[in-house]
Every structure is written in structure tokens, then in C-alpha cells.
Length: 149
Image (cartoon, rainbow, N blue to C red; front, side, top):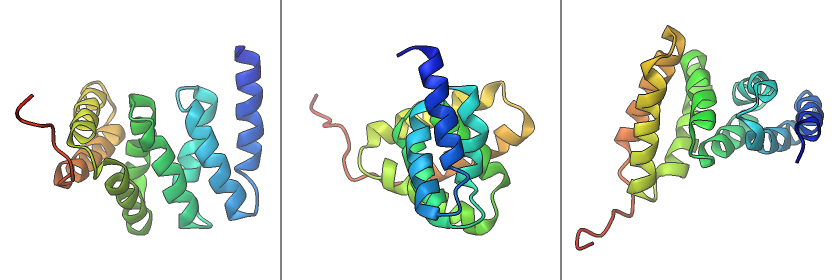
């Protein structure tokens, strides 16, 4: 897909993310998460994770970003955690638990990615990465790698 088409898709999703309807904003957050590596999507994603109108949007967007299991998604979630009020932070933590509560290998990879994100980050990002890492390390996943392998 061309960059122009990707930018047009992001622009349309950013507009959807400004809807008065929470389900439109949640759909926009889930879809925009696919474009989290694009600077044009980052501010809108952060706004959706911290949605003032409905924490369903917070959870849906955070979960979609975390399911990417990459630095782009984790960076947006960490940025949000750095400034989130306690209610939003609780819903973000719920998304973290849901995404990383099954496979220890995925949780461990996310912890490593967070450590890398925090190395050259500003103070706000370091705060968010610290909180995200702390939450990840408290998770006791259901499945661990087979020790016989």
C-alpha cells in the first residue's frame, strides 16, 4: 500500500476518533492501532487511550496497541500511563493483563521491549515505561515454555 493511501486511511480514522459516539471512537482506536508506527496516528491514539468520554474506548484502544507487541504500540500505552488518571490507568492495566496474561514468552518480550524504550526516553516516557514494566512483571502468565525443550 502506498504511503498516500496509508495517510488517507489514518486521516479518516482520526476523524472517526472525534465522533460523539463511543463505539465509533473505540472502532477508530482499534483500527488506528494498526498504524501506530505512523506519526500521524500517535496523537490520536494517545487521545483515544485517554478518552474523556468513555473508558471502553480506553480499554479497546490500549488492548489493540498492546496486541501489536511492538515498540510502537507499547510506546503509546506507556505515554498514556505516564499521564493517566487512576480510572484510566486501571483500564489500561486491565488491557495489559488481558493481552499478556497467557504466554510468558510474550510477557517477557514486552518487558524487554519496554526496557529498550526507556533507555533513551524523556522523563514522561520513562515514568510510563516504568509503570508498564511494573505491571507486566506482576503478571503470572498461564503458559510457560516447556523446560524440556
